[in-house]
Image (cartoon, rainbow, N blue to C red; front, side):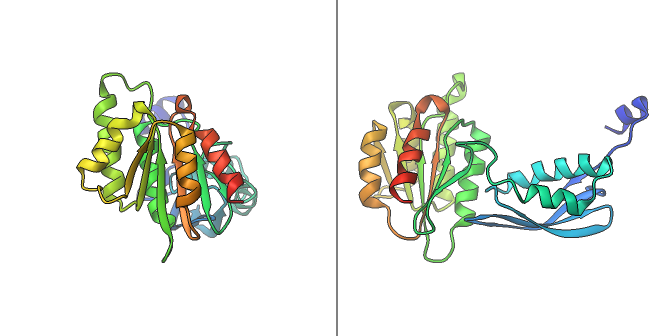
Length: 235
């Protein structure tokens, strides 16, 4: 990066969450069911940022925007004021639905192993005392020869994160369910349904007050529509 900047006679703005982020840095990142809080320091000025967008990974997106804007002379306060108006990154991308009673997070527009892992970590982090975590998971598409092992990995991660109900939907995701069972989730924590309609009927009777529910899959699995139905049912 420094070599490219030198060749182009360009300035470099370093941002992130570590000690190397000397220009724009985020500290004290805290996730809740209603958003992501942090303290942003830019060029020696520190201010709180309350993002309504769910997910720790969105803090890095905010830092990138702040680094670019402050380089152009925009104040940190103006950056934060604008960022705090953003309520949704995109439809079906970590979209909060439902109510405080049963919170649905519809993130089923797309899915890769990395985004699936990030969404599961977010689900585990936002649940408070007495709140149950429920992951409704479908297939990740276009993984080619790695599809099997990547679905295995996500199933293992869901169990190891302590997700209390894992609902797997669709034949293409069945290997994920088998990984969940193989990791030791056999006492009703993991269930499998061939269709979204079957999963919906189950979830209507299974979900209860205090549940935090993630719906996550690739677009082709169609679970975004299941997320919409659940959001309407528990609003």
